[in-house]
Picture 1 (cartoon, rainbow, N blue to C red):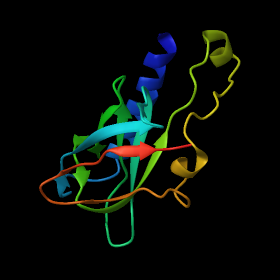
Picture 2 (cartoon, rainbow, N blue to C red):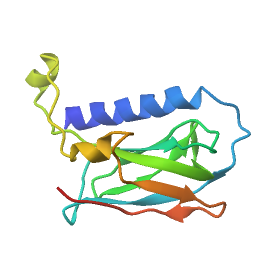
Picture 3 (cartoon, rainbow, N blue to C red):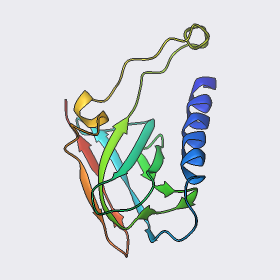
Length: 139
């Protein structure tokens, strides 16, 4: 339970760091969805949006909730920047407090291709009115 909170704090810090990088002139739109792996909701982790060529924006990110849902924030505010993005998903196995203190890293629960900018097959075009983008991964 403590580690789950710790992981959530890490995701929020990541989003806050990204939020410090740009002013407020970004054209954002709501973006949410559900993340599944082999048909089952992923219950923790992070979804990140990485702008592709032609989309000038900082990265967006959203924590995956217990029910597999996520909502994207960019530069500390709700919404994804309008434009084309690659999507990566990261989720690692939960560790015991002892393993965390020993600085161990849990194994990835997501196939490697979905966690890497160069290999992810996931892309999204975020329109001005926003979008629901469900992420369906398979092993």
